[in-house]
Length: 129
Image (cartoon, rainbow, N blue to C red; front, top):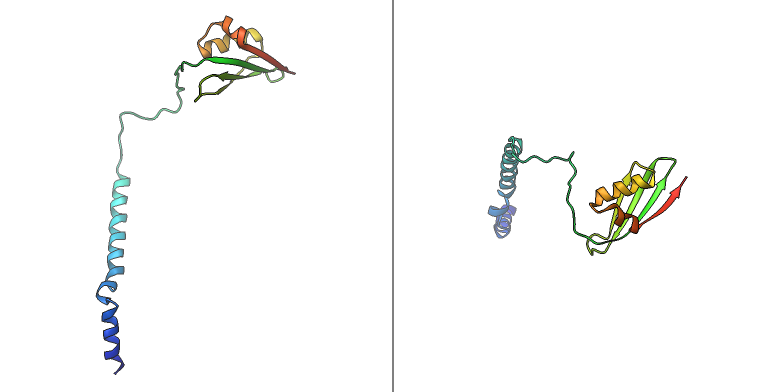
């Protein structure tokens, strides 16, 4: 007697839709995993490979405002801070393994592709022992 009351309740809850839903979801999940596994296991050969060991040599046309050099004589390292007038590239920082001022000026001139005389006009030194 309780069974006939239960069946209309199931029919109103649309059991025809909800009962196969977990089966359809499991089928989609299994098929998706199979396809993803096949695609991800395929080898991919590219002509253009990423080379992370090379440094990008690109010169940006910026106006250099100041060059501050901090020379650490005990380590033999010079840290260079370059301030520019460009809105996107405000500061540059370099570190060179030289401690003599003439070497520092030559290295900066080479790195920034500018004459040594211009570097001498813009540079200021701070020496740490």
